Image (cartoon, rainbow, N blue to C red; front, side, top):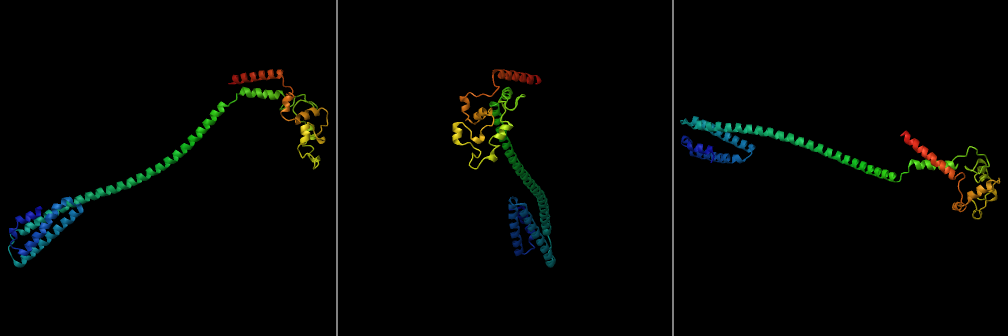
Length: 289
């Protein structure tokens, strides 16, 4: 039983002036309050406050009733009201302590709510950072893939690279054979390259397209004429020196090897000149470096 119940039992003699029914009711109430005080240690602060308020309410009511009864019956008061007042003061003290505890718990609860809001904010920031990291990962993966592809292309180009010396040799070789430009002393009728000349272009298929009949070659040589190695009458060269060049021009590509054709001006002397020019070019490029 609680301290309140024991305190009332020790002062039972002082309550002799009260009627038996009132005393029974009072003790029954105090017994309930004592049980409440025993279980109060395991209850939350809210229930403790409500129980303390109920005790204060009961004590206040008993004190008021006792004072009213004493005035009506005019019985002596041997100090029972003092005991009730002491109990009331004790309950009020407990109530104040519980109020301080409740205030402290309220402050802690507010701090917890603030921390929960901060946690939610940080969680949102983390999710945003996670999204940005995923985007960065995708961009980096794409960049790495493109870099690998470029490295493969670079390695492939290095493996199949051609030196500048070879390119210069080839350029000198085709220029020495007059395959891209005419010699300085070239005149119409010269069998050396380049050809066709303006006169040959005018007398060729393109120049005679408007003069061809609907039953003509229509821009292509007949199969029998090509097989026989001759030209149609409309494409026959007008100059004697054109016959050999034009005839060789219409032959199939593999006939060139049979007749041992080689570009004019391409001989051993020209090759030696090409090698010398290439060597001079390489040495000049190395000196400039």
